[in-house]
Each structure stands twice: as structure tokens, then as C-alpha cells.
Length: 335
Image 1: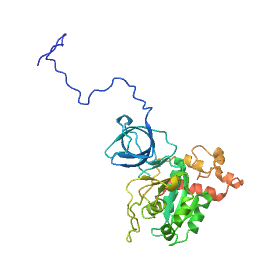
Image 2: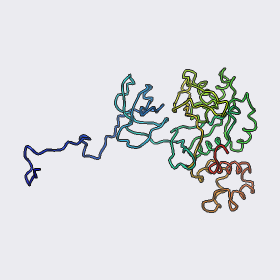
Image 3: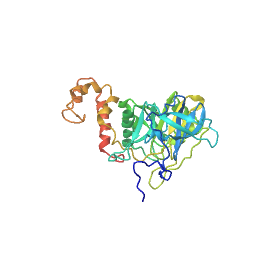
Image 4: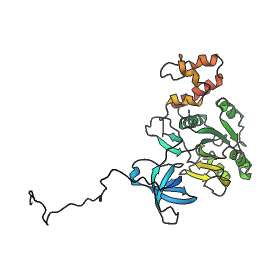
């Protein structure tokens, strides 16, 4: 092999090409100040559907975003072909700061959190009163995730024609959670959807619930022009079948808000939640934690909240509800 000396500027010097192509030497990346604003509607196998200037645009994540994830509800900056014409593909070059984030983990031992929805104002926790029976522990876990992520919770009880809602509503009354119940006949006629719609107006609401509770049926009633597939409850296991496979944002009639339908869940891990943040959802109890010992779990003998409640500053039922929510991280949903 020939060895080049001090003067390698000969014609036969071979230069190995860079297979990655040429790269700019500057670290300064384009600011994309002329990028269009987009709202992420759904994501399917790397293709991101956005609403850009009232047009539905298909885009992909720009390479410069690296590992930064994009989820339904994100506000993004889009460049390239934003005409929305068939076969066109734009690029998402920036994800704007999120105002709220709904997260979950696969279970309480999973260290990897998954962002379900971004920028939602409200979390509608949908549970059936029967067929399948309600799972209060899963509802509690969703409440904790809502409080932790900065979303206002809304409890939506379906199939009230099969079982009364009074007992379940009473158990959540001390939390001050807004709630609404509807039955299948009301949803079929649109009356039940109207009751729910009043609580969704001018808000972005994410719907969450385990399979078979009628979540997608309710979304179909709220947005009748966009019918998503629904399924039946398995008569053997008593569990619903997954029919919604990806999250989808849908506009409410007359542009009165947005609903985000999410796939049914069978578990809702809270490994990512710091229990100390849950107390922020209880403004009547939070001042009483000033005298708590360091790293107080709020469910131990030295907790100052007992004296706070005994002094008449808060309802004892509220303290019991707080401790029930904090305990959900120690129990599985099916317990």
C-alpha cells in the first residue's frame, strides 16, 4: 500500500466518501420563524396528522427533534408542504411548550412513563355502572394522574339503566369531582350526549377508561359525523375488547371544543407520580401540611393533617379521600 508523505496532493489520492452525506459545520440550526402552527390530531406508524389552518396535513417528525416525542394534543410548528393535498408530506420542526400532560406507566414497577395526551384541559374518566362493573381503584388512579398532570377531572358514568349511580357518586362527592351519568337509551337519542356536552364546551377533554365501558360509544354520540368502531363486553371474562387502537382528537359540533378518544386501558401505573404533588388538588388540606414531618406520607401517626381536620379547618371525608388516593400507588387496580 502506498504511503503518502508530506505532499499528498496527487491525483491518485483516494478520499473515502461520507455515507451520511455532507453536514453543515455550523451548530446554528434554522429557527423556522415562518413555520405554520399545527394541532396534532392523531399518530399512525410515524405519520402525524395535524390540523393546520383548517386543513388536515400529514407530517413526519423532523430529524432535528431527535428523541423528542410527539403526542395527540401537541401544538407544533410545521414547515414544507402544508396544502393537505394527497401524497404531500410536511415536517414538524418544533413542539411548543405543553400546558398539561397526562402520563401513565404500564404498571407501578415500570420506570418508563408514557405521555398519553398533551394540552388537555380536562380528563373525562369514563366508567360503566355495570357490564363491566365499576373499578373504583382504576378511577382513583386516573384521578391522581389528572391532578398530577394539571387536568380537571370529570367522572362520566355510563349504563345507568343497568345499575344506580348514587353509591358511586356518593363515594366521590368529598373530592368535589364533577360527575354526570347517562344510559344507553339516552345516548341513542342524543339526550345523554347533550348532558355531557354541557360539561365539555370550550374545553379540550381527553376521555380515558377501561375497555367496554362505552367510552367510544359516548364519543360517537358527541361527534355523530365521525363514527369510530365499538365492541362488546366478553361474557366470559367480563372485560371489554379493544376497538380504539390510537388516540384521536375530534372537534365538537359548532367548534365548541375538542374531545380526545384514547384506547381502552386495563392498567394505569403511577410509578411516575410523586405523592407529594397530589396534595395540591386539596387546597383545603394543603395549608395543614406545614407542620408535617419531612417526607410525610400523610398517612402516618405524626401527620399534621389529623390535627388540622380536628381543628375544623377541613371535612374529615376530604382527608379520607386524599389518603385513599395516595394509597392507590400501593394497590393494584383490581384489588
